[in-house]
Image (tube, rainbow, N blue to C red; front, side, top):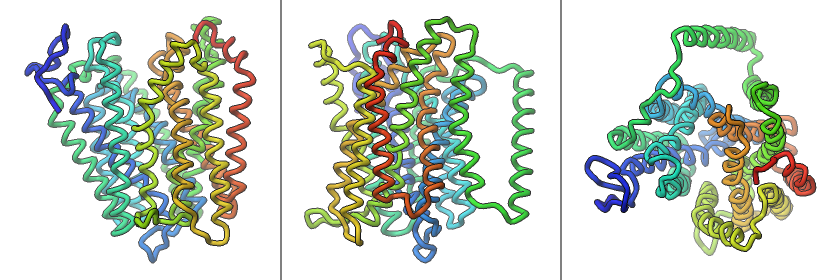
Length: 502
């Protein structure tokens, strides 16, 4: 709610002097825009795998579970991969504000394409949403920072906290609304509701754009005409070659969804390898910066393993919720998509607790190191899949297990997320070489891409007989736990590589 009270000693946030909870008025615009964007994204995501695996008679695509899970993993990977070019487009071409507006339009179109009952429209819609999310996700958080007077503005951290509450509110409400309509009424009506949500967010953004900082319009590193021509020429050549190749595959009758999943999965793993190799070979980096990057690779790999499991909440866990979990608790019936609301609910409840905990431990000089927090996060995510192994065993023979199994799994995963994700953002900024200070945040998101692409390959290779089985959950859970133990055992080596960064 807006108020007219100004923080003591701070300049008015807008010409009218109005603020939003004591913050610049533009925060309300970004809060509502991102809340509705996340509402559309998580609502669609809650339906995605269920729609793909539903039979044609039920209005779905009739895909095998393993293929649907792989499509979901690659789609999620591309959302984070495309955040890199999304930030680059804002820096070199449009500025953050215009890039977010364009991204919002593309996302909205994508959701409405999903609402069209045609398989071709469905996959084109997914591509639109991934591209639009890359444009929006990379820049809307940057615009929150633009609202404040530099990094030392005392309101800055609180502003980001309020902003992230908007994200989780949207994520919490989406499965309850869009999931219920899509699963219980009509899949495509649910996807249309996601499009309406994005339309509301875009309208909020355009109406409130006057409250945003002028910095958000600045193109920080404008591209020259020669560079632009060269880039468009190269992009045109590569796109042309890809179009010709896939046209030949399609016309000869060989095209299947695997022709899209495999190249994207391999690219999602190869690109982070290429980026790290490029940075490590950069002669402008001194020995200290190279050492820090070697230390950072440990954190990156750990994060990739974490996200490989964590992001299956909307795929293998969603299928388990639908097929193997009772939809009744204490006499109350609910759609299986509602399980997708547990994570944002847990985050909103536990994030303040963890923020307090780290400060309290630091006062007693008992705050765990970054390495140990990462190791704990891996142990938690691995443990969650071992619980899933037990849940799957309990569901053998067609038994519907209690919803409390999944409630426990999501709780364990959320605790792991709160020990790893925020710390990962922090250590990325600390270990980044000066030359790559801005780009390294995009590199951090590549850990999600790499992890999801590994998951997609697992799912395709293992197939329906293994994906979602007790062995499937046991193997990945054990792998994460081994990775967590290894990181804890080698923590002194990692700390040494980090140098004076703690």
